[in-house]
Amino acid sequence: MTITLTEFLEYWVGDLNDDGVLIGVDWEADQECEEIDPIVLAKELVDYEKE
Image 1 (cartoon, rainbow, N blue to C red):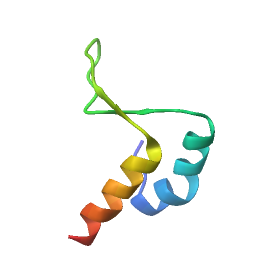
Image 2 (cartoon, rainbow, N blue to C red):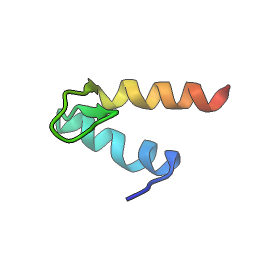
Image 3 (cartoon, rainbow, N blue to C red):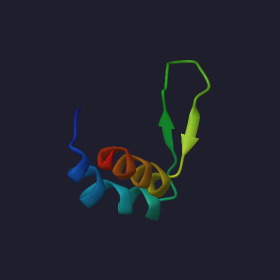
Image 4 (cartoon, rainbow, N blue to C red):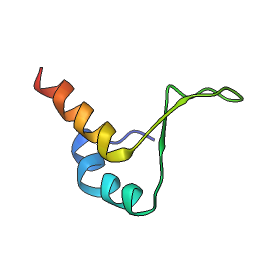
């Protein structure tokens, strides 16, 4: 499933944060991956888009 950055910011970040969910970044099956807070990820994505 693909979502836009706008959808992620408007609909997903708040709910994920409220639920205490961490987002797995660069995830591969049966591998460890970096986990990041959804608010931190949202900020980094917005900053990246500004560049």
